[in-house]
Length: 339
View 1: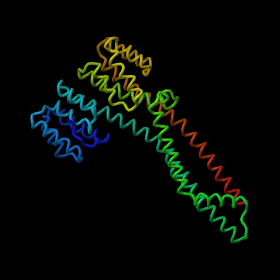
View 2: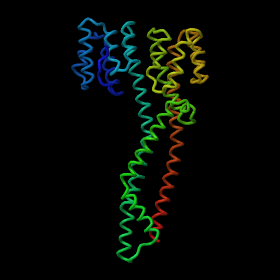
View 3: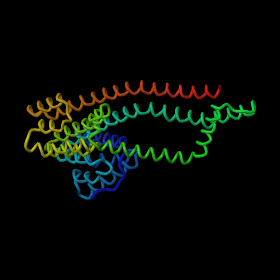
View 4: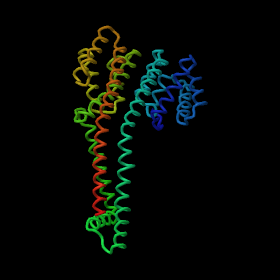
């Protein structure tokens, strides 16, 4: 049975695991921990989850089984890891690892959002309002002024005024066309996101690959460190990956590792760089695979930040060129109007 509770946001999950880890690290019993979270947390959904967990435990269900009923709000991979930690006695460490993983994910998300915000601001706050002001206010007013003062309107201005009138008269059909075009572009993007092409793209591909591999290596390291068999750890780690192509490639490793070493299985996915493969092989040979995976995850995060920085350096000049072209277009239009 699964409790049908709304999925917690990333920040809400961080809050829940942070509070849980704080109490558990102080050797406070689970029941007292849940009672305190229920009493003091400001989030209503987290309070409700704590209340239901307490009820499960009061009814004789152990925590390792009870937490598995909250995969919808907390996420299946994290519930599985918490259950594993409760059984192995490593729950505080598991909670700390989960918290660090979620915080790193939030940092990555904020980094991506920060890079998208600037071009989005230029387009929606500057370009679209400027275009609307030009065609729906400036040109009609200039046309009226010319007509009242000179009795005639220059040909350039008349052409633009007619175009503005057509836009204004057909504004709703135009909006519908733009809406359909936007829907078509969104559908195309979704198709590309699910295809092998996405990983092969020169700029986007590395970002997607690093983002997914960062989560995979962190979760696999946590699972392996907690004593979970590597085959099950791979499946748990894959469950949290947003890209299905990368997920399917890595899922195949869970069956391959029963016949060949993990290093060879991961190498067949063609997703990891040779330096990462070497570190996994070293960790697998020396029995410190969890440390190698955490180290690889750190390397991937650094590579992701470098890739984001490189992408930004490419975007900014492109935006400046686009804005210069738009300024020239507006300038030529207004110059034509003034003639």
